[in-house]
Length: 407
Image (cartoon, rainbow, N blue to C red; front, side, top):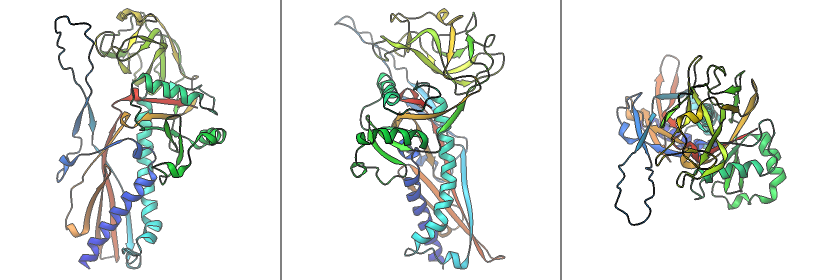
């Protein structure tokens, strides 16, 4: 019996990971990391420091060397969330868990359990990532029915220097995908040519990206006040992430996107101004105070990301008393689809400790996902109790490599 018990947890863990790979249309297309340092004793709330690439300014000609100090920017992922799903089986049900019957058992029990667990986690992850993305393409209130919005999103990724390496993806709600795919079905490749053809929601590839249908896309609702300007003293600093507009605009909703008149986006390397204003997303807000935004505002240096329309560097006062324009209307909800490069977002899992008898507890890792299955007998009620757990965290380390497609 002990041998069978070991097989039960092992088979369930393997089957759960297989289902997760097929079902997670978003998590399966982002940067997944597995932190083995947590093995044996994961510390809830511990943080992982992840370094973003350095940026440099060009030296022209053969003049005296001007060595630039390393200025690495580190961000953190908090691996503090443990979620799970719990099941119990009687003796007859438990007898189904054999290598020969695992398909039947999986369809009846494991698949619904894993669906419920990981679908909710993916929805939380999508909402988190979407609110961190400040680039927006499309027209608020209009459902895209051609490649115009997709092309605009692709341009935003290009301007943010996202790699063109075949790792770009688009996640669409079913209403958008129905109209878009029907109108453009001749442009999508045959699914048999796609390496992800067996993943749920895969539609095809066009416009330089793989398209997925996903009902977990985030719907953002603007606050009741989206009209006004920054304060006479907006309080912007070089390398800061706050803008004060509280005297003229009530607290905007976290995740709302806006532009500031006269503040243009610029090429990350050449610092030449693009033809569009820099978009910002609200990260934190409180009544009667400045809001925190993304991206962080760099007026000078290798990380400079804003400029005047003539590509001149801006003074902090350029943000004072400027008209603010939000994407969408007040108190209105807009579904947010996403186009992104794989490395824009990170999903990280850590191994939970093995508990009790190892023959009753199994932990498996596959493609950056770690799951633990743990079972114990309930002799009073003649049942076997089973729990499936995951310890995870997520981050948006390169939001400039992503763009919302508003609906």
